[in-house]
Amino acid sequence: MTVTPTRLFLHYLRQLQAILQQVEAFDGAVAARRLHPDMFPLLQQARVAIGFTLRATCPLAGREIVSFRNDEFTFASIHAELERTIAYLAAIPDAAFNGIHALTVRTTAGFAELELSGPEYYQMYAVPNFLFHYSMVYAIARQAGVPVGKADFDGYHRYPSGFAFAGQ
Figure 1 (tube, rainbow, N blue to C red):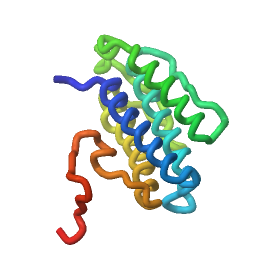
Figure 2: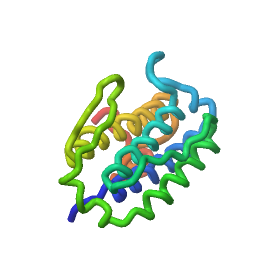
Figure 3: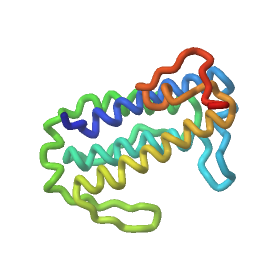
């Protein structure tokens, strides 16, 4: 079975929603935390991850890239952006990606200009970049003491209450 871009991103955007809800409930100040001074804070990492889902799927589905962000960096604005992005992606039919192998996507990566085939753009550029920023949200939350784990990250793992790898 082939996993379409929308299926992959919808799964992880829902995980991101749940992680952000846990962060907000734990301590809203975590929104401004960073792993390193020259890296984005948690909410900016979330916003970039969300944006990458649209930046990836729109060209691959033959659509103009859309954005649902606003200028606010609040949990409410990020949750609203997530909701609109999820609704938009969910409405893209799987058949929209049938021509991915024939596509060439032009984009920028920092200051680099890229021209990639559709599959290379998706698999080698868009997915890793999304996962990088998504992972930073998770890492910042963990570093701040938010009780999230691998099950929260991928939605597949399960561990008994109180389980820890320490001492293993």
